[in-house]
Image (cartoon, rainbow, N blue to C red; front, side, top):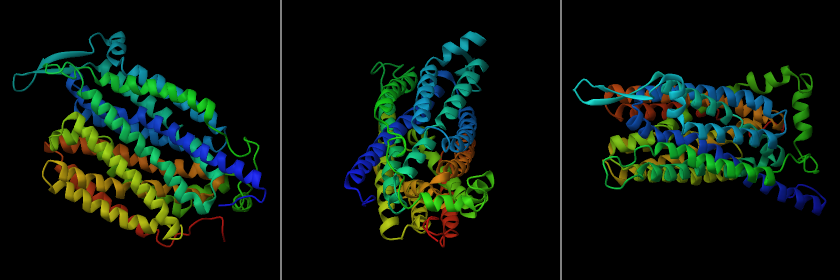
Length: 463
């Protein structure tokens, strides 16, 4: 799309736009490397440190709540600060916390003696029992990591909203959103391989390898931080370019009625906007369903379907890569087939997600069921990407970070509740069938919520 009459300015803006997209994709992928690695370390923490599923569920619950709150607060902050500095600070903090994760038992011994002790179980067998110091160390590190993770998305959202015109936002933001699945997919395979390593053929194969799920990602995070410092651009104004045509006037008009960017304007455009509130509710359902794979996927596939650690990593990688295709298709279809009205497409995608999760539940162990799960990833990640697009176009670029941060608060309440509920249901029922049935029901609820947004306008820039 030609944006400026001056060819030189138009070319320079276009180059900056694509550099911004790919740099922020890499940057946000690194955040995912250092967040989703915890899911792949969980079987090792259970095996080597005696951390139970219920305790892991508590960690996920607390971490998800903190991440949602952090994303919300940082969304407001991100609309006001330099996005490049914010993203780089977040990467640095997450790198340091992940480094500390691998040393959690050693840190715990500084405060409470032995990190892990042995006890006799109900059947007379020996069981590992984590010390309170180890449990607290892991919990505090997870919460700290989730807090700093919340500084990753808002600067990316701001840069995209300031650099991509509304009529291209669904397609290009869907391209950017593939960083979620690239991050999850690659970390799934890398950490799956790591957890399968050890002394081959020995009884202690893989013992202690959970540490490298954190250390390896910290190394990649440090390398990526250096890349972001050099390559990541700022807003068009920071790069000496004019504002994006067709957005500045409309955004100013949207806020001038309530005080020119005041708190009243923010409330009207975001917190009291019924479309934004409903998008938050849809985000709750999407991320609740996604969490059974993102948080419990490795454990579920190994215990319910009999996959090895490496194969479970492969399945989740394919689930995420199918999500990439789903996001790209959804962005194209929204702009080309649905006139920018993303919720209409999301109705059909959430229904398909429910059907495919049901198929995965019913199919026997093996790659047939895994194929249904990957197809569900294709359908689920379309709505995952499009809620942010709809929020940005509804609240305008002036409140891009705030609006996405606000609906993300709902998202990670969903993640937290689901992480806790799925872990508890799996523990109490002795398997994963009941959690999967709940996921099917939540997907149907998401389709109904999107149906209520059927008449939502494509964007707020046009009257």
